[in-house]
Structure formats: structure tokens, C-alpha cells
Length: 181
Image 1: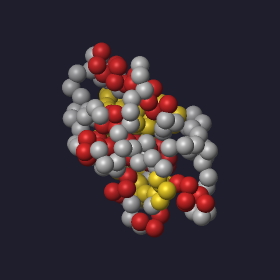
Image 2: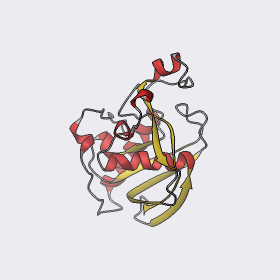
Image 3: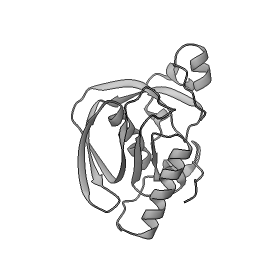
Image 4: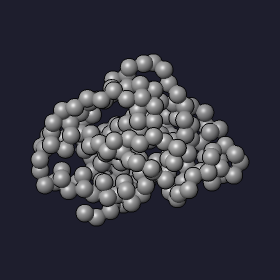
């Protein structure tokens, strides 16, 4: 399947609340997921939400081993998450650097909950639930935000940490990352 264009911040479609998937095991859903995986891999993403490629459905994918955009991050199992729900398992938050394929070249410190439970459906419409922490929890929250029309800059609490990746690296605020975005 083809690699799709990733919509960038400023595109109104990224600010929409997405619609629930009601039909599973369809050619449309199968092709959408294939396009999403191809696009995410081509961009070295940790995850991708359907709205980022212009599809207004509550579908996210994520997961990787050895991602060049996040060289120090632990592996995350490849996951299709449809119609997700997130429950907080702690009030504790942690700030860490985030980037986004829809906000290329920029990074910021973003607070996220450290321990969550997510549930939803896989590509076959089978329900599942996972309890996760750390970077895995961060990725899920980031991708699910897209389904509600939220981009990570809207979560930044200290704008002093928001900037272009290369400038942040040059000034020693962010460890250099061996990738383009």
C-alpha cells in the first residue's frame, strides 16, 4: 500500500474529533491499516493516528524496535488500537521530550501520566486491554490525543522548552537525534 502524506499542524482536519469505527474486517479498514503502517515506517514514527493521514476515524497504530527517532526508548509491541479508551492508574505525571510527524522539526517537554490502562479493539474487532508505564504510556496518550483533535504543543506547560530540534540540540537542551523530521 502507498505511503500517505502526513498532515501538518495548521491543517484543520487535525483539529477534528474522530468518529468511532463501527465496521471491522472490511477491505477499507485493512487498507487503512496497511497505509498507516507503511507511512509510519517510512517516517520512522513511533506511532500514527488515522487523522494524521486525513482519515477521521478513531484508529491508532504504534510500536517499534530500535527506532532512530527515539534511540534510547524501550521497544514497544506493534499494536493496532481502535476506538481506544484510556484510564489513569496514577495521578503522577512526568515531563519528557516529544515530537510529532505532524509537527516536523520541533520538540517540547510534555507532561504525560506515567501509568495508564488502555483498551479498545484490534484490527479484527477483538477487545483487549493493557496496563503500561513510561514511554509506552506516553506514546499511547500522544497518539490518542490526535483522535480528539489535540496536538502535543497544546499540552506544553513551559514554552521555554518548545523549539526547533536542531536549535535545542545546538544549545545542549536536547540530546542529538540521528534522524530527519
